[in-house]
Amino acid sequence: MNSLIVNYTQHAELPVAVVTGGTSGIGLAIVHELAADHLVYAIGRDDKKIKDLENKTNIIPIKLDLIDKKEREKFFKNINKINVLVHSAANLEQISIENSDYDLWQKVFNINVFVPAEVTRLSLHKLREHLGRVIFINSGAGQRGIAGHTVYVASKFALRGIADSLRLEEAAAGIRVATIYPGPTKNINKKEYKDKKLKWRESEARDHAKAVRIIVDIGDNTQISEISVRPRIDYDVE
Image 1: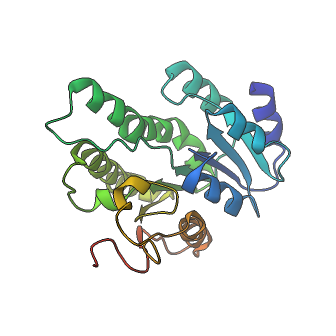
Image 2: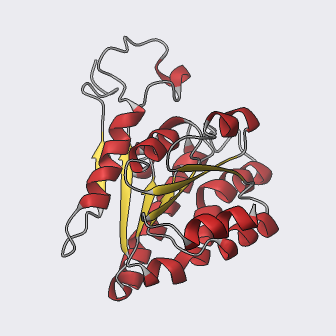
């Protein structure tokens, strides 16, 4: 894998994007959107989904366990150029305080908070060099409390804190930081809305990818700090 990474990124004329959670859902839609004009590393763990992305133009699927410190550090050490870093990998556990335990909190925060923080840290030098962008795919749960989802909500509020603080820390270095807050999305979290009519109540993953496109394409003197993408009829509307 190392030689593949070095070979592609050293000779890439296109800007380079890295998308975690890039083999399914919103992450996959972002990979396809950015591949139009970027060389995109799509990080995932599922062998079949990785294989499905092989031989796609401008897409390099990478099987990588982001929780594994050695794997994570090895990959980001060997990639030589990053223009766009998108954090889309997430654990979607829907658990209340009463039903939680320490191990569950650790599991959710590992992938939703600690991994994006560490991946960003490992990428900072390359992002600074190329005046890059960091885009966090958060959730509507990162904007308000939701009963029965306390562990997930807490992790997404923590992710929001990382993004907001990173934006201030790296502004002088030229790194722009954005957060996208997706609402209910087709084929994601279906059980939450199983008793509701779904027409206009779920966004498409590709619409979240279009929000990423807006952030990536904005002019040099501007940054978009936040975008909320909600369905046409939100789930609070009867």
